[in-house]
Image (cartoon, rainbow, N blue to C red; front, side, top):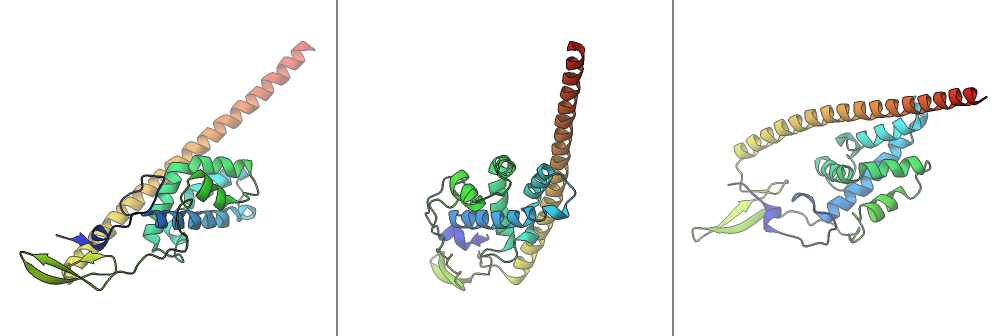
Length: 217
């Protein structure tokens, strides 16, 4: 049976949101701060985009959790992406609204990571996750055994088991990425259709108002 070291060592830290088992509060806070930094970078490319500001904001919020944005942070990209997705799944609409009403998006990190999501409100930003041990001692049937721990926290796996597990993980990740891309595509289409419908409604309302004014004259 495969055991994860982090299932043995449990850190009790305060948290405002019920986080997935593989995301602790410090990782969530770090992911929030990183997400806001990457979102800021995407928004700064407005001058390169032909889209209206509102559409540029929506696209930036949709694209910010891409794994390529998280290569230079404290946690590995897959963990940062998970933290980013938890944040955006719960607060993407609020973040969009804030950006649309604050074009200079001042204090974005403070607003989102401390006030809105409270991801960092009770987290020590200076805390450093402990490094994994090389081995862990355990007892099976009365015998004391020393089991190796790999860099991902997996305990007691043989070389072949590690290879098989990594292959399954890669395949699962491919399927998740494919589903995520399809979801993003559908979400963008829905937002675009919603915006176009809203714009058409405004134009019709404006046209009807002008028609009414002419009739009153």
